[in-house]
Image 1: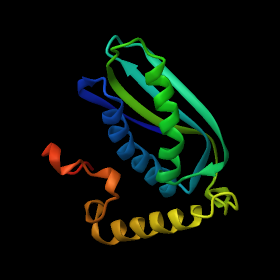
Image 2: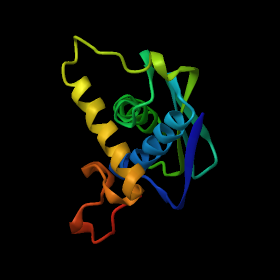
Image 3: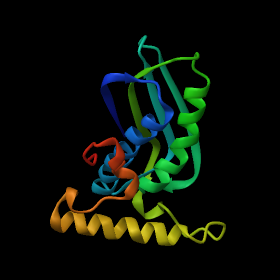
Image 4: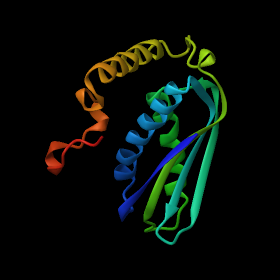
Length: 156
């Protein structure tokens, strides 16, 4: 299961690519939750302005369906893919997906090595509840919003 976005203008800035990645992680998470699924392998896809496709993947310790977890594991994959691209590369598409799908019952178990994981899961569940009642735009994490200094509206 995956989702991707093609840009109107090619992007070469890593920070901008990270910003574009977050809404895709949320969209993927929403789809996983709706189907009561989780993924154990994360897959990142980038397509360069020259139409060269690069993918990076990583097996996770356990299946996940949480946007925050997907994003946290996707960032190093993105940094690796951009860092290994020729200098000055620009990208026209970014995508994120999961493979090795399993039941959501196996997803995101408590982790003694990460005591904050449970709190992040609860926060994401509260955000999901608010969005279900009031609509997707009713609440957003800070990373889902553009910096006010840029003068751009929040991303969805």
